[in-house]
Length: 522
Image (cartoon, rainbow, N blue to C red):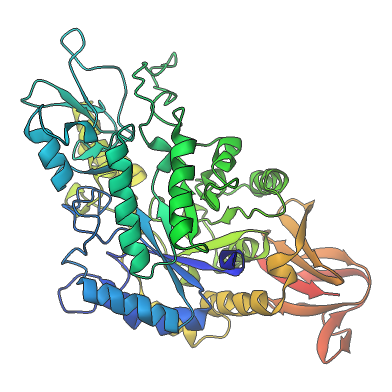
């Protein structure tokens, strides 16, 4: 099987914000098509599209009302077909988001299910009678508040997210078969794989045991996720996809901070890889903690498995201001992501160091998670100013700001820009097999200084990255030549080998202040 994704740099496109074609005032599929040459030039080999299906957009498209359509705000099915063909002509693969845990309550499946207790689709969702005159159990929505919504039929339906997102009943074989038909539809359209949203949340066991609650009143999501049987469902689904397309790439979002559990959904006929939010979603930059997480990932994933590497997504603030990074340190983190053994996922705008959006009012917000947090703060008696602060903390609008194409064009013309740094690094990965297929050794050379060594056969590559605000002297042994550096290297011109700048063995000031990296090849 061609595991093409192991050598691929992916690029997440939040479709609502990526590129406005000017035809309907909103970003869309034609905008993506128009920017494929840009992505090809950057070196991107795969794109992940967030949901573009018809949707009321209570949760910005993650509330799907038709799995086999294209939302008119984003274009037509013909636009999608043309985009996939154009992407493939540019050598770019396309994976699409699949939201199989829940649908919009406006989806025809739910409308039929909710119409009557006797409906043939009633059991496609999770309906329960009241218990002692109230909700069936204590489960809370991941967006806050109860996970149960009462309707006129006298029953509650379950929603692990917004009340407009009803959870499917994966105990029902008809649901599973209907989903297979959806996946087949998109495979026939030419997509190269799927990113599965909160896939470990599928309700498969039928158990409604209460979740435990901590002493401070926080609910622990132990019985509503990772239910017995969910792994078997995912393996069946993965097997069905691979029958149709053996080299399809399958990546899962796992709502857990337990790396062992996150990893358990990969391999053995299941998903190819999963997102590790312990690495990618950190609020504070601590190199020691990132180093330890990378070490754990290296130890846990086998030789045939590749973890994901990312620091940005549509669910968190953009990392340059999340971490308070300068341009130099932004380059350093991108270098770390592109150097380690794994599958890098850039979030659109990472390549130019885009900053997060700041909301001044709830009127500017679109994200349901942030809006609900704002409303809850007001109900608790907090001031509007405090509620807006909480809105900015919880809202995912921060990273969903429109792509700054003027800045991207400016950086393309600047050889020292973040954009050109990323482009050059990806080119280096493509021509240096050790950086994609080689073994990896991680070393901490001191506070703020990390070294990565990749080896494949006789080829060895060393990447030294300095996150400090001061220059660093590092030991260099043997005949190393410089492949690439994010800044000038003070002692690099001691001698040349094969026309490339080299460094003389000994202790050499290699890494200059303010965030810098150097890549050496023996």
